[in-house]
Length: 435
Image 1 (cartoon, one colour):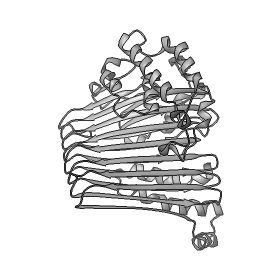
Image 2 (spheres, one colour):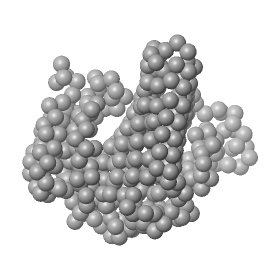
Image 3 (cartoon, helix red, strand yellow):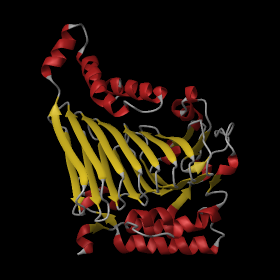
């Protein structure tokens, strides 16, 4: 049965055997053994096919026939500085950690104003990631592939009662050297008791290059911790972009998460969250804009296993031409999770009859005293509104852009940084002109 659900790519196995001696930490026996075991676990399962429920809206058949090779540090190009200048938000005035083609680049990174002891990097201290990589609980086939081929990553530990006032920018850059290559990063963020932090993670790359970027992140919030986390994706239009965020939220902790998906030919964002304490709160917000040949997939699962916790999901999508999207949101309320509040909203705007939006909200409730809701809508632009703007001198593209901005801006309202709110609104307004 598994053979019908999953696809094989023997080239990945061959590539692993040929290149494993050049991987980070190849001189460490425990890491070599871990990589070998992880690749065997991936090959035993394979690439999710269209019959796998979680991937039903995203066809990965092409991955079975493509041969992406490994990137090395020698593949870095001078153009990385150009992309850094495009991605780095100077108005935020904070530190920046830069990865180029999957590897830390200290020449571009800015640690000023941040205790560098908070950070460790896989390429420099792989032993700090040993427990993280050895944990296979709930791992999927792509989790195993990431563990086998991990290139680099970061671990950020915020001590208890520490408040980081500045936003930390994490910038992932792909260059022309990444053509037909892949890179896999692994990250971990740990906020101690009553700690507070802000992360802005950006992904950027060239349009004319085909590459595959896969990142898995683990976020742990201790009692009373607060985290604001933004992921902005503007990869090249031939790129494959996949990220997973696994979150553990303790008593009275708070997570505010925002994703904004603009680039890549195919993007997949997985958000898996677990409440392990009471009186905690999770807020997920997201916007995705897709033109012809683009596909954005958002998959969320929130496990309410503790009472008196709140979760809110608020996602908006705009699709043009042959653009495609999928939102799969699942909330599971356990038997002991009384006094749960869980809300979910997904709305999509189609600018063209060729566009496709898929929505699959789910609620699984096993407790009695809860308040849960979900809703999903798909509609077209209001012709009267478009006519009104055209009648006042706007060309069709500008008029549509203004309506797109108004529709998407709901996602950014209430976010705690005005600079990011305005930049994202501008991106939405000018999206049709640039793409």
